[in-house]
Every structure is written in structure tokens, then in C-alpha cells.
Image (cartoon, rainbow, N blue to C red; front, side, top):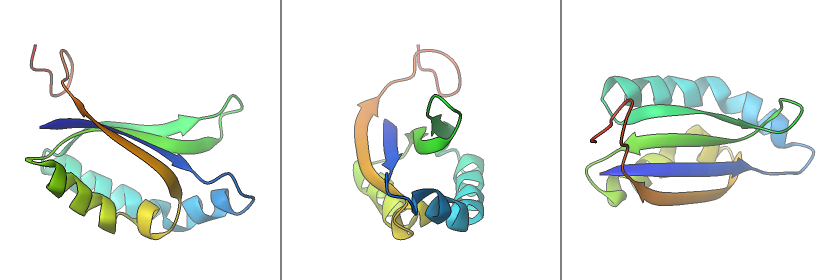
Length: 100
């Protein structure tokens, strides 16, 4: 099942530093999930000045429970980077993972 994950960083002064502190670990995990076919596309949400303020991921997991298990261990969650996370079922029509 495909999902759209939209996750927003905290807005406090320390938020950018928390993101940078765990970014390499988060990206390593994202690369591993991409290799396993779970991540179809993902990247940073930017503000008008180009600063990272969150993330968006289109992913595929057999179940919502497996997606939740990933979220529980992702460095952006454990490192308190993402403060608001929304997950909705998704169906790609075209592009990576497109089912038509």
C-alpha cells in the first residue's frame, strides 16, 4: 500500500540544529528503504527562503503498521525533528510507483 507522509519540523530556534544533527543517519535509512523498494520519492519541504522546514515522502509498505514501525525508529522522529506528521493512503498514477 502506498502512503504520502508529510512531516513538519519544529519551529523553535533549535529545530535546524536538531535536523542537522541527525540528517546523515536519516538519509542513510532513507537510502536503505529506497533500495528495499519502500521509498518511491522523498525530500525536504522548503520555506520561501530555501530553508528546510519538513519532509515529504511517497512510500510503499505492506501495511500501515509497518510504516508506523519505520516512523518510530527514524532519526527525525527519535531526534525530535519532526513535530507534526500526517500520513494518508496514496496511489501514484504516474512516475515511480505509478499504478495507472
